[in-house]
Length: 97
Image (cartoon, rainbow, N blue to C red; front, side, top):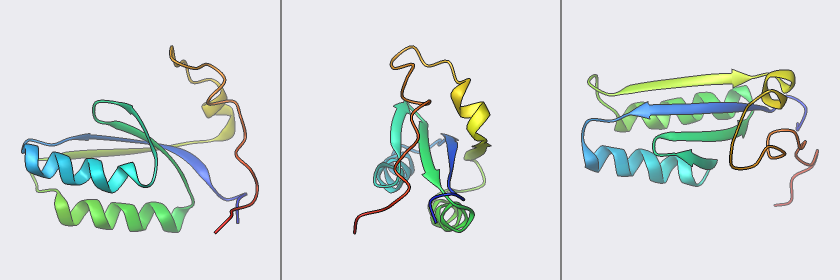
């Protein structure tokens, strides 16, 4: 299960502060907050589709959402001034429930 999970950048531009907070709360439980409207999420295809569906219920046509899937090579080449090793570490291949 862990093999088909990839890093994704989730970037959004929300015009309404109330909707912005709802999107933030939805993403906060699923990923790591990187910048004002950018999260990184490690998920498989099904989890990303579920996330898109949930965000789509919150967002309107005036809002923007961009999801970028990063292969492991791309993730290792990310330049992040806060923690260079963060993107290079492989997450554990198991999940504890």
